Image 1: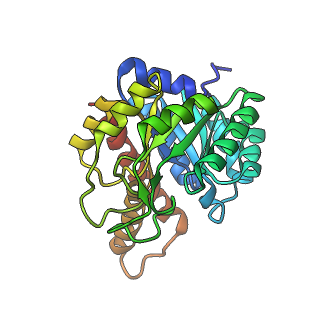
Image 2 (image 1 turned 135 degrees about the vertical axis):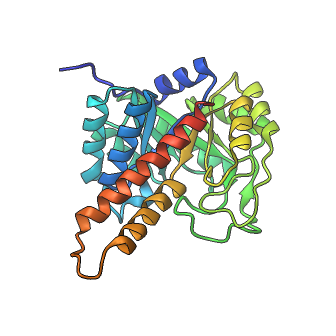
Image 3 (image 1 turned 60 degrees about the vertical axis):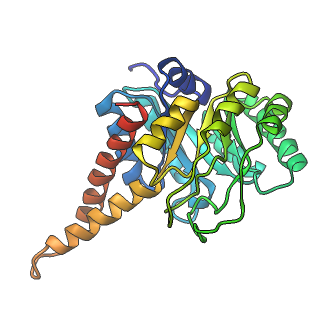
Length: 289
């Protein structure tokens, strides 16, 4: 057997910090996207974070895909962190830890500060038992992870306050902080206005905690690079990867002649290959290539 390449969130973020890049965090919401993420990372020889979000449960249960994610990470030729994205309940975080996830995100960003902190502390205690690491969120990216809702004039966005971030990080003991600095989940209806000073100030106030960027789909290459220079070390990316798969499936359907049989397996392979290419482009951009 080769070396076990399953690493913790902290270990993968340490690589990002040393290289002054961001590690891409991609959601494996089905088997095709899982294969796309692992093969993209291996082909580019870059570390990667493979995630599953609680809101993807209706697509495929965590209990089914989680163990496959962990098994594939162990066999990979590059370091892979298997991370729970946007865990909304402590019970769900517990499930991910039992499966062997090496990172969990507790998302209490819509709760009052004191309640978010209390639950985040609990998540840190739970993760410590298995050696996993914790990401939490302060401020709000507006819409939920599914990208549902109105991206324009989204008044639920709250920019992260660096002073509050300092208190939150010190009191909770988390390993990474998702900050709100002008991004939104899903697809933008208008160009985002990003405030990189939020990232710089959070890093300065928190003894350089790795900052996580959510809602990155549709952000320009220049803005990604500016965010990384400001101290972003993990970038969540899913919507455009998923869209690339959907577009490829549609193209494949159009390419068939009327008399040709249509097979689902062929559609899913077309989607998988397109997602892999999309992930590779994103990974290169996050590695400042």
